[in-house]
Length: 68
Image (cartoon, rainbow, N blue to C red; front, side, top):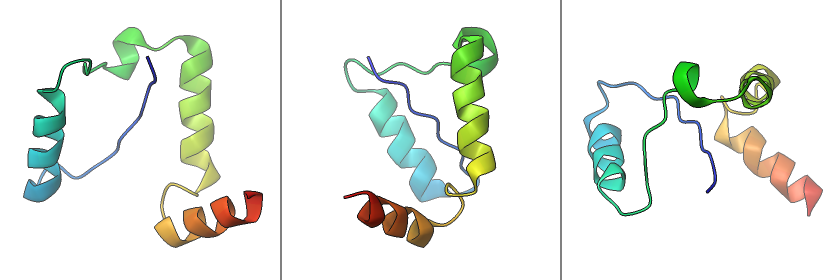
């Protein structure tokens, strides 16, 4: 099973409804980081958040293209 961290504004109705739909699919479960992630996984999450690449999709696209 893969882990995905999503940070979103709960007031964004479209995103909230999409995530609710995903949560109803088989094989998907919600994990609250403070309860379930190991210290190593939390370090990875913090590293991703601190990288700044999560903030701007354009930067992410450019980074991915540069790695291909």
